Image: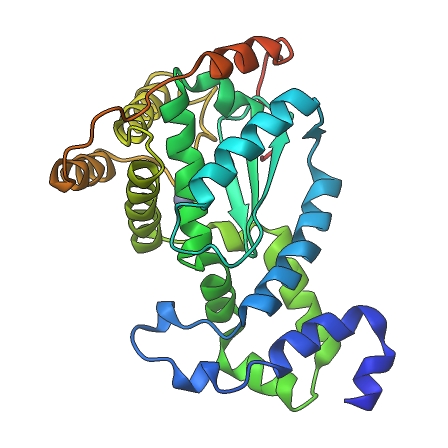
Length: 279
Ligand SMILES: [Zn+2]
């Protein structure tokens, strides 16, 4: 450990894995549900990844748009099942219709997605879904899976540390953390419906937005092929969302739209001709 601590950049990764404690062995259930990271470790990891990501994407810094996204996001996060971490919301200046979350509560919403949403509840649906990934700890579970038991053990024993550090960095760089799989997508949808409902936002917005994306994807596959490439909307997902909504107790005054949302849309820079970049 003494040796390790002298190398600064390596310290985080090693500490993260060494500090896993009994969590790993105490876990039960499916392999995909195993998470070796504590909340504090996840947050630290997220911070590192967010720095990496923000060097690669163009963050849109208009304070009014940024504040709006953060406020809507926090409102949803405050009604989520994971309130013990601080959520960070940022807007990315790209026309690609997408949003993504990395471990630790760091969420990114593309301008192209804000533009594609017709009303506030549609935008909230996507943000809610991304919060759902954080609630479900899908990033750290995915990372545990990718690292594998052998790697974790190796790292704990102090072998091949630089190699493992490379693996971990590579996972972030390749977006592996955002490819969660079908079960995780469904789970994030379920969390999102509940968050929206509890936050007083009409969860139907999520279903209508998914429908919109599905249509866009079918209509112009070349131009919009990257739409939710890491979590494509499917008719099955839309049906599941609607059936969950149908089971919720009736609630009046669920908010579908706001004037502020449309003001924000008008503030966005004029759309560039072709979507660029992966995010
Ligand atoms: Zn997703």
